[in-house]
Every structure is written in C-alpha cells, then in structure tokens.
Length: 340
Image 1 (spheres, rainbow, N blue to C red):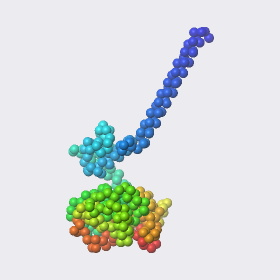
Image 2 (image 1 turned 180 degrees about the vertical axis):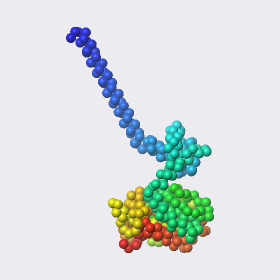
Image 3 (image 1 turned 120 degrees about the vertical axis):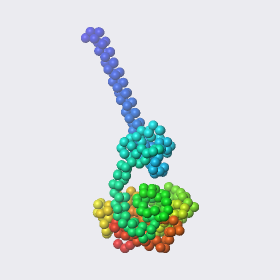
Image 4 (image 1 turned 30 degrees about the vertical axis):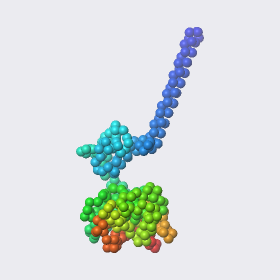
C-alpha cells in the first residue's frame, strides 16, 4: 500500500471512529432524555400539578365535581394549575372523544362518561337492586330517599329519588365526607377500624355548627349506631336538613363462590367491590363487643332526607330500617348481629 493510500485509510478510520462516538453520544443523550421524560410522566405530580397525560385529564375532569356542571377554560386553568395551552389542548381532545361537550360559557361533561359510568358493575347492580325498595320508602314517607356507597373516606350518592319538599345540595354522583352524613356514619359504624382511622386522619371538617369534629364524639356516635342499627344526620351536613339512615349489607364472595345465603352472585356483590370501598372483604371488622362480622360486608346505606321539621326519627326509623333490611336480603347479605 502506498503512503498516500495508507494516509487516506488512517484518515477514514479516524473519521469513522469520530462518527461512531458521536452516534454513541447521541444515542446516550436520547436515552437520557427518554428516561427523564419517563420520570416526568410517572412521577405523579410536582407541587400538586399532575405530570402524566392521564393525570392531567383526570384533574381536568375532576374540576366538574367541585365547580359544577359548566366550567370555563379560565376555571379549569386555575383549579388544575396547568398552563392554559395544555388545558385548551386537553379539553379539545376530550371534546373530540365525547368526554366533554362545548357549552355556552365553557365546557360540560359529555355523554360518553355517562355511558361508561352506567357500566360500573358495583354501582349499577346495587342501584338496580335498591330502586324498588327506595320507591316504596319514598311512597311511604313522601321524603327524599338516598342510596350511597363509601369511596375511600367519602360518601358518593349513586341514586336519589324525590325532592323532599325542598332543594337539597345532594345529587347523584355527588360526594360528601362520611363523618358529616347519616349514610356515611351508617357505613362507618360497620366498616373496619382502619377505615374510620383514615376518615379521622383525613380531617373531621366542619360543615355546620352541628358537625361531629372530634374523634371521641365520632367513636361514641358510631357505637350508638351499631347498637341501634340506625344513623342520624341532625343538620350536620346542611343547616335545616336532617336524615335517618340505615346500612345495607351484602354477602362476601371469595374465589367466585358466594359465601352465605341469598342471591349475591346474581347482583354482583363481591369482595372486589367491598375492597374498592375500603371495606375488609374477609370480615368487615368487628362489632364493639369483639364479635367478628364474617360473611357479610357493608356495601351501602339508604336514608330518608328532608327539612328537619319533617324528619321524625321515631316514625321514619322503622321504615328506613325495613327498607335497608329488605335490600340486604336481596343482596344475599345478613345483618352483622344475625346468627349464621
């Protein structure tokens, strides 16, 4: 090989080495950027602002639970903490997928959310089983009737019948802290101690001058509810509004097999639903005397609600308890104090 060719070959090898190193460096840089991007997308949130696309869309949709049926772009920006351009882009995409609709003055939830919500098994089956008993209770009392479940430490209303003679703030899909409502206390009384502790740890916020705000007072109230089988909201969530509530129980289903009597398997009450609500699927805790509540879990609560001067616990209590017991039977459950 001539000196010229040797020089040229050496030069090419050097160029090739530089190119490969550049490509390696570029690949390393791209990998680093990808990892940083992944970390940004999976880190959850920064200063309360969600970082992932799903988290941001969830935060945007969650605004409607707080702000009402129609929300402006400015309100979405303010409550999510996201940049305006990001909110506008997400809203546009959610509209295209029918999760949101454009409304005068802003946005509202789209029908696709309703369509999907109707497919949620636990709520749908509980609601379908409860409606006949709720209709009878409404006809007998002429008051507003609520069906609610626990979601974490809050109450979510899954069905409401009647008006109760006055406008009330509760609505289907609405949420309130469990300690401030009759239905919430009815479920907390028969939930595991860990659920009650979680509610206390989340804060016993005051909604009216009569709201229970101390752990000791809540413990005393729950003990009384376990003894009587009824819970009362004495203007604790809304001034001028009271209610009488009773818990509803369903049978535990383990490994696809129903445990206990009745028809829980036909209406879809299962340990999956129980655990979603923060209820121990094995036994739902213990009674105050230490008696294990095995084979049944609290899956919801029914209440009669109305103006305080129309809510007579002595008169309405037996009707509410009877409706809750009938629904419990329909779900294949038993009252925790019943013999097995």
